Each structure stands twice: as C-alpha cells, then as structure tokens.
Length: 467
Image (cartoon, rainbow, N blue to C red; front, top):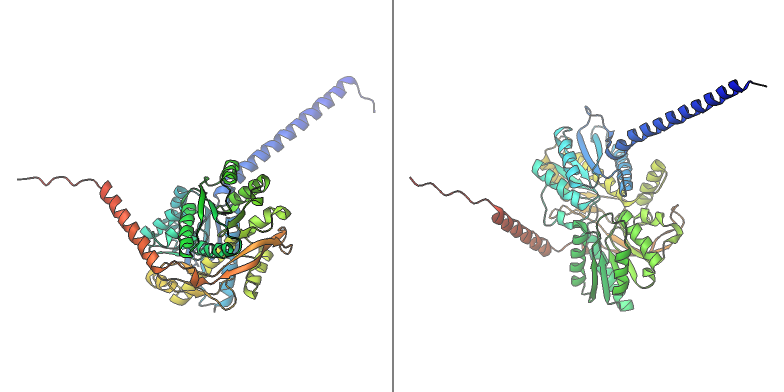
C-alpha cells in the first residue's frame, strides 16, 4: 500500500522508538533479575524438614553455596534430605526425631561462618551445628560450639587438628580425616616402593590448616610405615589459586618420582589440567589420597582424565559394591538427576548420626546424654564394606572407617564421567587410626603452647598498693 513520505517516516520512527523501548525494558528486567538472583545465590537460607513449631531439634548447617565449592553445598543438602527420609522410614512414628534443617552459605570465610553459627544458636535456637567444607572455617565454628556448649557434627572438612589438638567434647566428625587418608596413602606408597623402588617425593597442598596438617599426618605415617624417601619439594599455593603454572614448573625442575597433593575440588581439577598440558604426568606418579577420587574430579575431565592416577576420596559411587551403597547412589541420582560427590554421603552421615543419637538417648535428651550416646555410636553407612559398621571413637570423636585407594581406569557407567577408580587396595579401619600415644603427645604439646602463649601475652597484674 502506498503511504506518503511523512507517514512512512512517522511509522519508521515509531517502530524504532517502540523497539528501543522494549529493548530497554528487557534489559532492565534482566538487570533486576540479576540483582535479585545474586544475593540469593550467595546468601539465601535453605530450610527443610520439620516446621519450626513441630521440630524436636533445629540443626544449623554451614556450606559453601556459591563459587568453586558450591557443588559440595548442593550435594550436602541432597544428602541430608535422603537421611531425613530414611530416618522417618526406619523408626516408629512416635520415636522418629523431627529435625528442622537450616543451611546458609559460609562463603568459605571464618568470620562469616562464625556470625551464622551464632545466629543459628541465638535466633533459631539450634541444638546442633553441622557441615562445613573448609577446615579453617570449621575451626572457627568449632570454637563457637565449644563456647556455646552446642554439639557440632562435622561432615566434610578433614584436618585432624579438630579431633586431636583442638579436641573438645562438643565436636564430632563423621567423615575420614587427614590422618585416616594419609595413613592409608603411606601404606600404599610403601607397597609401591617395593615394586618400583621410587625414592624422590614432592608434596603440594593448599596453604592453610588443611594442607599443612595433611602433610604433617602424611609425614608421620610415612615414618611409621618405614618408608625411606628423599624430599625434593614442598609447595603451598593459596586456596582457590587461579594459576598453577609456576608450581608445575617447580615440580618439573625437582624431578620427583611421586607427587602427593592435598589440593581438593576445583583447585585439584585446575591443577590436573595444568599438569596434563605440561607433561608432568608423563614424568611422575601423581597421588591424592583424601579428595582426588571425588566424582566432580572424574566427571569434569571426561575422557581427558589420564589413567594410572592414584586417587581416593571419602566416598565412592562404585565402591564398595554393596546393596547399601548402590541404594544411596541410586536414591541420590533419582533425587538430583546426577551422581553424588563425597560431600553428599558426609552430610547424610551427619544427619543420620544426629537422628540415631536422638532415637537412642530420647528426642528431648540433654546435651550430656546426647554426647554420651554419640561417643561410640555405631551406624551402617554407604561407604562401609560388607561386614563392617562405622563407629565414633570416644577418645577423638572421629568416625572410624575403612579406606579404599584406586587407580583411574576407563568406566562409562556413571556419566558424564568416562573413567572411575578401580584396581582397589582396601585398608582396614583399625589400621588407620592415630595411635593413642600420638594423640596424647600432640594434645600435650598444644596445651603447653597455648599456656606459653597465654603467659607471654597476659597483661601484668598491677602492684599491690602499700598502706
């Protein structure tokens, strides 16, 4: 249809204005959604389980919910939901504890976690604290639990300092710690040395409590296992290090036969990618005995993951091959549509421990009775091999569990992973506990160090005035 020039110009101008207005409106909506979503992604509280007025106990949990470690928070929430379902199904209705679960993002920062833990206790009347991925953060939350006399159940962090030097009666842990993992790793390397005569060892771990305690426990376990080696390097990148190139260069220059790492999660994945591209893995055997076999590592690298890596983790989807473990993995997959990292089983174990303790001691039992019940508590968990039941050691409040170490081999049964661990070597739980003399020695030294620090920093008393 023919239109005059002026009318054409008007319609064109109107179309441009309309399009521009819509574009601006869409952009504003996107910006608003981002602004809304950003605090929710990093700060929002997650709540499930019993309603506030109906709960027998509130459990305040702290996990990272954003950033590199967010997968551990998401998996922990799913694991806790599975535990609540199981507790409700296995107990008589009148005996099943009703737990209200609160989860907040600790952002892997001790100061943030301390504020959240205090709020859980004061505002929400939490009877239990649980969770925490970072060992440095866990130490801060453990001190809150001690001072407030609230039971804390650690589900993920692993520094043995929490159950040895910094032990107190309100703290319990339900996943393998650095001493357990490194004791198993030392035995593995002792056997490997008999086969290939390796001598030169390097260690790389994150530069905070977990990394340094992992090395200390590993060094002690190597000595106890009678392993003779030459230490050719100790490297300490910061947590969430963005570039491992300089560290890889140092390892290549040191020419170790074996590199043991305590890097975990996204940090270990990033390190592996650098190691593969540099050719480091062609010149040395790489081992990660505590976290390296976690499913997020196996899944993230797909068919690029090199075979032969020596890895373990605190739970495996394909070990042990028991009905109990298969059910846990299948239930998680049904709930989430993916396979779990070890954080899921740790959080599941934490809620199961709290629930079982309340069943045995009574839903309204005192803290004293709950502590006595948790000390020595036995409970069958997905990671227990046939014929074994996990239990909590009364001396350390650390769970006692077996550990399996394997090598990366092709396996497509757990997509998107193209490889899993196999060629398992399994170590009995009783072989991996810290000896009682070591526990008492470390506690004694820590007590002396604290006393010396207190005396050296104390304000001198004013002189007594004379009459």
